[in-house]
Image (cartoon, protein in one colour):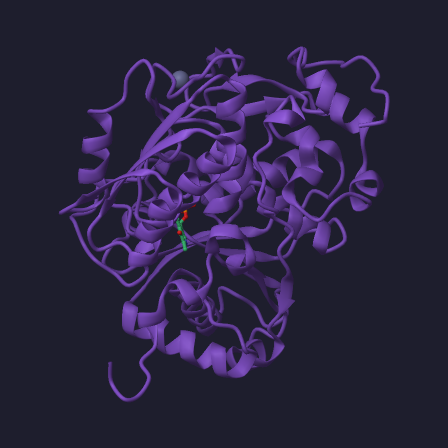
Length: 412
Ligand SMILES: *Cc1c(COP(=O)(O)O)cnc(C)c1O
Ligand SMILES: [Zn+2]
């Protein structure tokens, strides 16, 4: 922040507050109808129903900062602050999130024929899942915009993360989650002092409960209904590129529920390409889903632009049980644009791969992360992943949050 910035050029003017801290946010844009929206006020969806995307003055960012400046900064996601929406650092609610290791998994990789396999281990972030990234940035920006009370439905991890970060920021949080969500995520909400509703149903039912509570003083922070959670999650894309020395891998596999991380990584790498910090190559993005809840896979296989809601279902990979993702169009765009694919895996296979991986690599992945192992193995078997491909899988949470994914003896 000691650096002086030249006046911004091109594509809009940064918001006044951004000049203080280094955010170059210029506004919000609808990816479907192109409408621009004021980012200085709280915003939800576009009037056309699409999620909104945050836009930055990338020319000015490129003049103000470069990869070497960033290299010297603290090991958290705020190292990319010019490309994040929070204007005044006083509003940053942080627990030390981001800059997770990108670990080689050569032994397991060799076993499945993908020797250049890497795992981005999001099990090491606060709250135990990568939802902390979205919560840190989303809560901080909400606080900056004067919001005092946030509410959301969740499959567990997002609610836990938002409850804890809301407490950190001094905001109220109301969370609704299905009774079947991991019990630990309920307890995280309790510890955070959030108002918690347990719903006998799925995330859609929790969503209907929350919709009834939204009003003047309660702000809806459901997945993709506000634009800044995505900005937190996109930092996984910046980190993968920076950790590889400002280049991208061949393939990234992502366990896809609402798809926020996948859309975010695609957006982040697009921003880095526009900045000229990485080359033109885009990794092929893979949406990994469960065979019992695969709306994105079905849409991709049909070559469709939108997904059809999936009938209710249960999987051990609870974080990817999203029957009707609001960002379907953006997820599918990212898959088509990068020459990617979508694949569904079943619980028995992913649990077996979770064990196999743990024994070979010493990491206890979450079931959603393990789903990416199964996907990598199967895509290698079909030849879609080549033997020389550098492949990154996202382990989106710590296995410790899912003690029942492995049996021990005596039987419990
Ligand atoms: C939420 C969640 C996912 C899915 O993330 P999206 O960005 O919503 O697709 C994957 N894994 C875990 C552990 C999660 O909590
Ligand atoms: Zn629109």
